[in-house]
Image 1 (tube, rainbow, N blue to C red):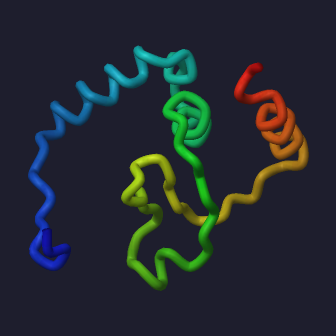
Image 2: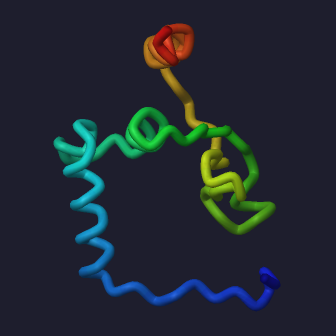
Length: 97
């Protein structure tokens, strides 16, 4: 497929809401609004979030999903020391043996 010729299909807003509601119902992290999208992406959907500064300037986008469909690049977020340490602990314990 030629990326220059690709055109994303138009999706009705109602269909997007249906899909989002279905995804939220599937995972506990989606039960409370506002949904912590980063936690859902990383822990529930198993996406690897790779910080990448300058995506907006270089690619005119806020985030992108790589071809492996498991890695997303996104602007770098300032993460508190507490959240960072929790994620490190989870990574050391995951996957369970």
